[in-house]
Image (cartoon, rainbow, N blue to C red):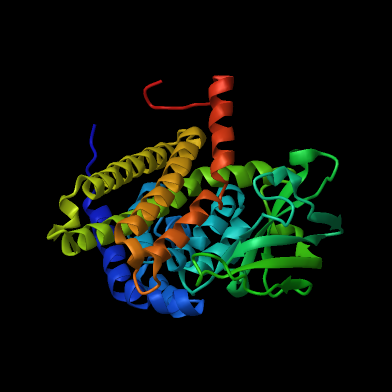
Amino acid sequence: MDFSITDEQKALRELAKDFAKNEMIPKAEHHDHTGEYPKEILKKAFDVGLMNMHIPAEYGGAGLGVLDELIASEELFYGCSGMATAILANNLALAPVLLGADDYVMKKFIQPMTENFTLAAYAVTEPGAGSDVAGIRTTAKRVGDEYIINGSKMWITNAGHADWFFVLAKTDPNAGHKGMTGFIVDAKTPGIIVGKKEKNMGQRCSDTRGVTFEDVKVPKENMIGKEGEGFKIAMGAFDQTRPAVAIGAVGVARAALDHSIRYANTRNAFGKPISVNQGVSFMIAEMARDIEAGRLLCWQSAWLIDNKFRNTYQASIAKVFCADMAMRVTTDAVQIFGGYGFNEEYPVEKLMRDAKIFQIYEGTSQIQRVIISKFLNDGVGIETPNA
């Protein structure tokens, strides 16, 4: 069993680590306080090769795997969770497209992303349909050589800056999840109404909005896969992206751990650093324990999908463990800082606010438990190389 990473992966990690140190961390507090979208930082991330990692080489991309993304993502989320979410949102929008798109779509929409700074958004969640994707109400009606899309989406990352959307809509309202189809929709298409930037608890510089589609005409060539395959493709995309979301939680937790160690070693109480007290040192030890465990779960789920195994079960385990772990670790970091931890002048309260979203987006912690339970109850579908 080999846990070593390649020289190329080490170089990628150092690239992301340096980018976080030099570009993200110095500006994180400003963007958190103002909510200003970090577009210039995203452009720099594109320039150095930290965006669109999965685009295949035949379309001009790096063709990197999920594990490669995880190695870079942990460092970016360590730097700033809100900025990292904005930088890596393209990967979520790209995932279903890379799974189902034909050569026409790849050349028209995806290949140009390797040459020009482009932002994309994954528009699936709706005001009344979050974890229950099958409950979406957006429709796409075939009229001649076009589909007419009507409906509303909510909590769409990068919506205010996107050049195109991946939209999941019902092409057959009577067929349940088998009546859903995915489309790429150019953001300049008439009828798209982008709502106001939402003011969120954490990841404040990430651009999250509602998007309404009113009689939006989409060429049939923009369909991803075949009609009726949208749900399967969208769910398959989560197998690619949930490990990356989970490792984001690891990055946030690791930042909280490092701040806690530094503070505990310099804050004196009763004539000695608080780090020598078991009440504090054991909290820090448990933080480190859970971060290491979370990273291994993420790497396992990434390795599986990169090696053509189904990883749905393992990705859900990684997602729920790391999300809950990050919330626990950042809460403990605030506790270690005491009153200072509750103050905006110190970094850990931001980390705690940022951590909460990991229990919510890309499938709540509760829905991950539902997925895990179903696999265990059914007794089928869990794939491993040693089964």
